[in-house]
Image (tube, rainbow, N blue to C red; front, top):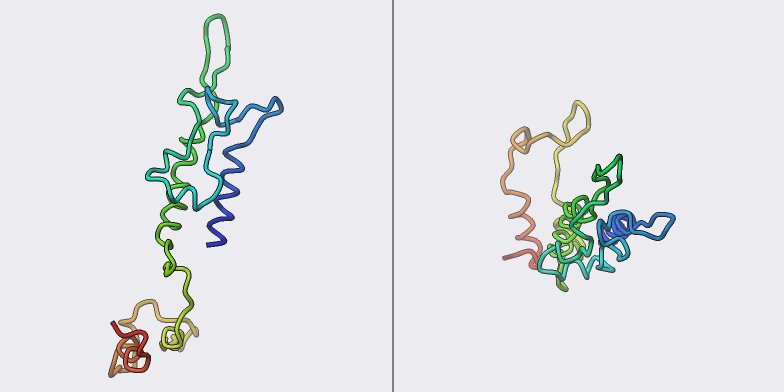
Length: 152
């Protein structure tokens, strides 16, 4: 989870970037407020929707290019950051709780599950069906027989 938190920090730092005048580059018409208001990955994961993490405006910046003619320029933090923040939130929620999926270490059985090597290249086979030796029991059932903690 440290990697996901680090990525979150980098993404929000970019989305909350300011120009030389102190305006938030991706803030749209609300360029005086940081466009991402969550301060940590756990804050983000606690929201019911990732869209709640954004305070950016809904109107992109514009520049005047001629008499009475303006062109929209720039991007909104919510447009460019929603996808990655949703993914990070999903990872954090998948791992939430005291017994989160990424918080435990492998048991001895899980580490010892045999993988047959491809004799030509020394690599694991592409699919389990390419294994050449007959098996009397699956690695999982063998693990359950030896490790009481892995039994359902």
